Image (cartoon, rainbow, N blue to C red; front, side, top):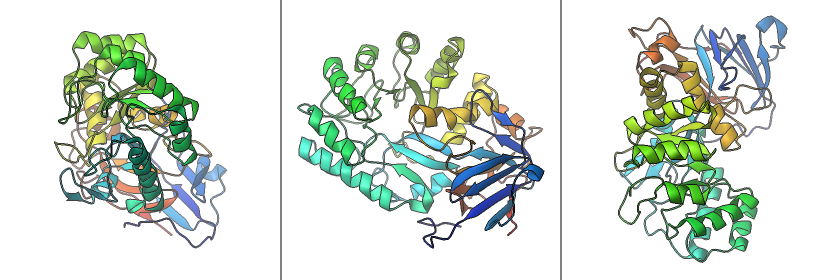
Length: 398
């Protein structure tokens, strides 16, 4: 099942999901909920609890979870989209749809930097950001929410430029450091302007990823003071260990770990955040499409890696790709809470995994099997074509 747009009929919709075996909330403080049923009306969660206690009558879509786990839709905090569901980085089609089959229902652009002929002048970069924001708002490949239109700052930008971008609907900056602004003082001034107008920011951290980018070390990162320390584990080349630890200790901004980065540095960051009692700062991205390609399973691979090698319970690791990101990026998804977007992933342990159940299988390093995804209360995909087959899968009952 795959749809480009939500239902346009205008008729009210009611989704009821029953027989949920495990409800993972995405909330670090309360990751497992005591509930077996979720209700959503017109794409918003309206009820979470026991079936006998909820109004489940009149469902337009009824899903029998068949005892599998339900989680919030996963969020990829770091992607580089260009045009629809195509990337020139690897000349690949349908990479967003493929990521949906890896449980990703929301993506955040860190800049449309792979756009051929990307403009570097201020008028051009603003025009490109606004165009990308409009395009990905109007066209949602397989229903996935791509928050695109992330301008990469360049020298000469003034406060009014950020006001104009925000007024046009731009909500995120591309990676600071991928453009001409690579020094701390200039970056700090522009990041403050962006924050003043409600634009969330991130920075390139570590060595250069492509020709034309450069080293961004801890001093620049600390001075720039972006909302997110982008790929603190390098994209691909990480900073020295002492600089990574210093970044964790010296600020309270988000710590983004990416699939296309240094795995050892990711585990160092995780361990340091845990020692500081600040796992709420950890979020996940893929940093794809990139030189190493597209990673449809990149987010669940990171969850499994951090749980199995980092010693974090699977239900906590899942929060890194859901509730943590939602809060640090001011999104209305990512948590199983009344009022949030009805974006869900149905998971179970993979067939023949050595794990006793889903959470144990992830803790052992296996990937979960995905049986279905839902975005805005609408079923978007069935059994994943990319994950190992789930032991059990949900079914549409009506």
